Length: 412
Image (cartoon, rainbow, N blue to C red; front, side, top):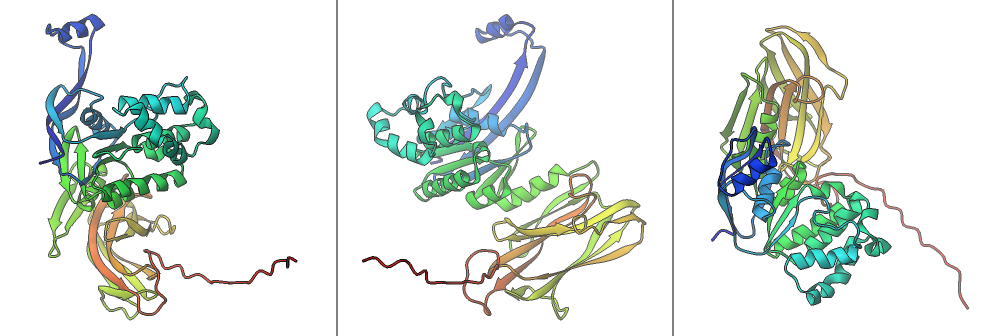
């Protein structure tokens, strides 16, 4: 049985000439509104126990509204939500906190509204205080808190008891780097213990590392549902989509879905990964020298061309990327029929594992302004370590270690 079941949820916001017209609607006397804005339209999906779902989409797509409906803080116009477990939600910064009450008093109040008794709350109060790490402010009014302190306290309360379903909506992006790492560690711990996660984030790395499934909410509907890398690549393409542009996803022989998009004024004709001898390779060693070769053709006049690449790990997280805008090698005034070869030479200073290469042709510093062609998973390759001491991670940053014995004063 699914732990979360969302069935045909729709939500719109209406404005009326008078609030009395809204009240009449509540009692069944419907009066046409002045305006009606649809936020969600016929959204349906199910989540299995223990799954981690990332909800992605542009601002205003309806992600936060959907989470509020799932958590019960907002009602849908139509449709149903079925939850089979205890929910803990961190939706808006300090939502539900009384600014004139102390942090400690707000913990009792908020956790009490979550259904916990005073004895249960007292048992974890010290843990909440320790996790939040806000010092003496814990007994000061919330109105004296910074936004980061409110996040610390809100997250500490929301996760004081492990929930069956944890809902997080971008709130952690406000916190400092240290607390973000600490919070994500707790989320991962909950996942290992069986908690289901619903996460809204614009941070690709967070979705790729925490989630095993992603939903793209676009124009109030579920536009894509599947593997996080596939959905994130598709989202990246639609952000830059223009009239007449191409957008397709093709499943390769390895089963991975490749996203190709762009308007086609210039296209990629060939992509190669070669070693220092110029030979095609699909495997490299840590410390090798390699090159990414991109051959392209121009089909229509182009005012400027920027060519770039991104190396991603097996989860789709960015390892390293750059383009000819950042290297200050932008070509201008290109003519139809011209062809170019771009060759990026680099040292393989990445760890052992499997990687992919993303390639893009566009204007300016990113593909948002004008995307001629964008290819995800254009090439895949592996890296092994046979020449250097064992290390962990995706980056090879060999250190120089110095050890000195410190001679202290002798004691009698």
